[in-house]
Image 1 (cartoon, rainbow, N blue to C red):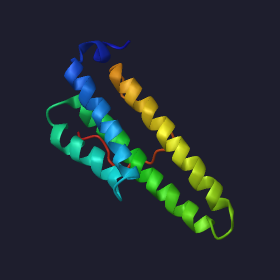
Image 2 (cartoon, helix red, strand yellow):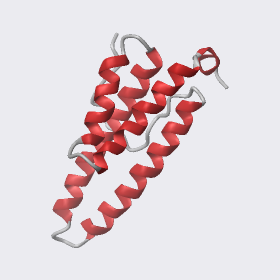
Image 3 (cartoon, rainbow, N blue to C red):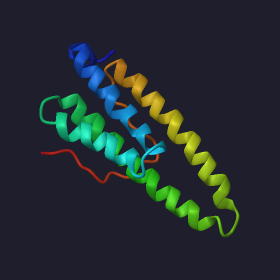
Length: 122
């Protein structure tokens, strides 16, 4: 366990979990996969550095996933898009659960296949 993970309070870890889990709103609300984490991130990023980092990672991943899904929808006309959308949905769920579990340990998960749209503040 890193020094940062040991220094975090349980409330800070819980907010890190909430950032990741909030993205599941996308399965209920259009654009909820971005709006859920965005709301939590905007509310807590100035108060909790862990949430700032986790929120940026989560938002970058969810925006990247939206782009990948749009590309897959276009590829549905060729046939391969159906497989890609299914793969992306399963991949999104699995990776988000892993990220939430890592946040519970105080570790800010680095999502794979992520384009960095939101950079750290300097």
